[in-house]
Amino acid sequence: MKKKKSVLVAMLLSAFILPGIGQIYVKKIKKGIILIVTFIVIFVLMMIPVFSGYINFIKSSINTGNTQISTIDLKIFGTPNSKLSMLVFFIWLLGIFDAYLSTKKYNSTIEKTGNQTTVQE
Image: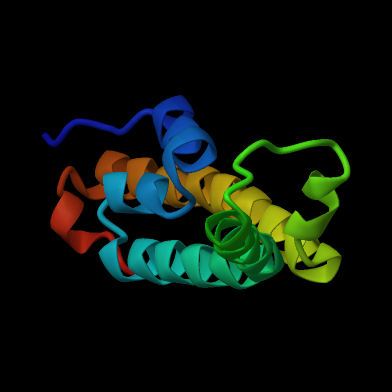
């Protein structure tokens, strides 16, 4: 009989490592990769205003020779896109919740059949 997977471990992997890692832990590879890629793409899109502000600050520092950052300079960095921030948060929560459900389904299949290969995607 195959070993059951820990629901807590799956949820913690998705919560603290990356959404989708908990799914990979319970052999839901395709679902895990989709969650990981979606999370990373939306996170990067959310951070574009911050990255572009940082690049502009570096360019102006090189031109002027001033490398000190004041609180006024911090405004040029921009803020993350708030709608995308909510979407990133939603995907993070979805990853945790789905890791819980996927692990429960995985363990249920192991109990019924004794074989992890019958766990469906």
